[in-house]
Image (cartoon, rainbow, N blue to C red):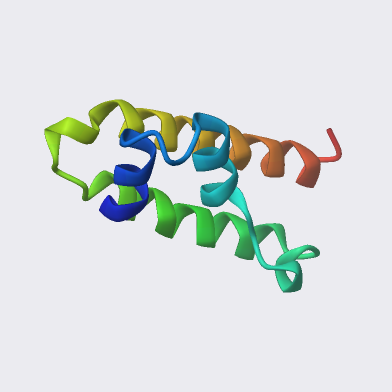
Amino acid sequence: MEGLLGLAHEGLLSAGELADSLTMLPLSLSDDPGAQLSVLRERKNKVKLVKNANLSIQKEQALRAIEEFEAEIRNKDRGG
């Protein structure tokens, strides 16, 4: 995960590309919101483990992107 955040830090990935890479899910999970949330939770936990202070901005962007996508999934699951 630190490598991915590092690519964003170096400008090789835009903030949008970072968000897309963290929220992209396998097609096999498209009908299973619970599994989608589980995968995102695992990714969020991996982001939280990154301790490199130089990546703090990218870490915040990553967590925000994942949390926003989790909220979208929950809203869809509720019929919203």
